[in-house]
Image 1 (spheres, rainbow, N blue to C red):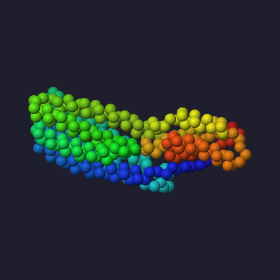
Image 2 (cartoon, rainbow, N blue to C red):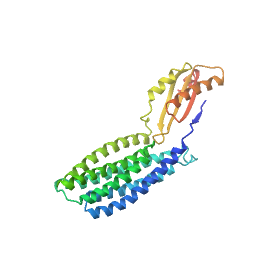
Image 3 (cartoon, helix red, strand yellow):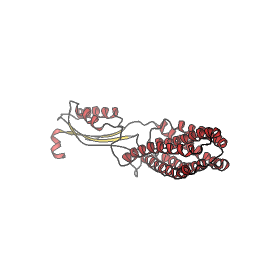
Image 4 (tube, rainbow, N blue to C red):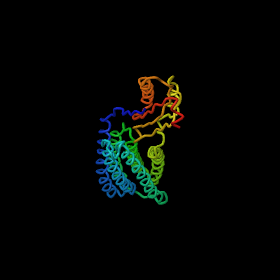
Length: 298
């Protein structure tokens, strides 16, 4: 006997995530144009390189916004689980763009280690302040994001904030000391920091994309807790995965002691479902089997 349960979802958070990514997209696109002008004005290769990087960021943010909106559509006969995994696709693409963008900056940075170039330190200083404010605001807007898409977009913007903080520090130093090599050295530190975190998030995204057990789900603990129920003899065909890194799904066959009435079976199922709810399983299908059926089932 099977059953399906959908826990009530937080629709306010869903709407906020799309709205926040939309705000981040328009802020990033506007600032990218501002960066190109600023890079030309200050003769800063670092700012121009960051502008190219932010242009790629803007494109991926726009894609993330579109896919996040798509992920809010209700399920239908084409996508019976709904469209949540479209958000996951956005996280995957955004992460890959970040890796490529970081590689681009690395290519620009290495020659400057060998042949450091001078830039307009005062112009860099003021552009850095604007950059920190604009991107910092976007990071705050996405700070409560739960889906992998929101997390990846947030890292997108954190990368930019860190970059502008580095430009800010370097610009102050360059106002007083002639050490232009500081700019590329700081760029290397930023790239290493960003790649470390992005690759970590990409690994989690690939895990969810390939329907692996979510990192926040203790598979063995769930089985152990269910087996502690007096009515349960064993469990099998246990499958757990995540739709988007936040909405978890499980199907499970539970073998119980032979009972006389259907109400006893329903009582056992209710107990199992309560355990799954405690472990953040939002959607569950529980198949209850009597011990005498197992031989025929397996």
